[in-house]
Amino acid sequence: QVQLVESGGGLVQAGGSLRLSCAASGRTFSRYVMAWFRQAPGKEREFVGGIRWSGGSTSYADSVAGRFTISRDYAKNTVYLQMSSLKPEDTAVYYCAVDIGDRFLTVPSRYDYWGQGTQVTVSS
Image (cartoon, rainbow, N blue to C red; front, top):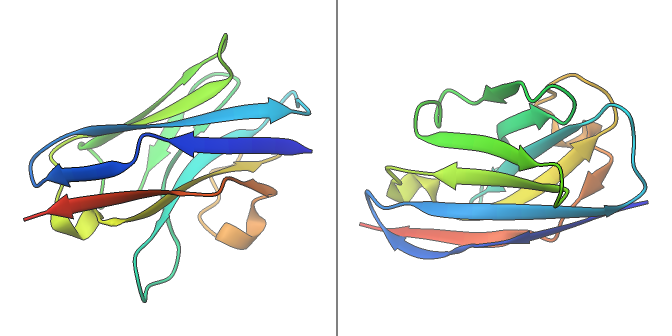
């Protein structure tokens, strides 16, 4: 099993920045992707971006490309989502997830493990 714990959510004004963290523990794998998803009230969970743990390549949704950056810290077994130029439409619960493999999958049901989520609210 893999345990994921997100942190760093909060309230920020439009145009501001916030950094989310996702700490992983438990079973390890040679290849996997850690991704961020978000879900706004009344909307489906959507892919934000992901990072291949081995190699560090990343992929982003068009809606956040150029504003959000995903990085990883091997020593801490943690993935970060740096969010800049935040907009009210970025308001959502943000989740990290793990897929055992090396593809950037955008369908939530394809992911094997999930964190509990952290709320991000962007005020206008």
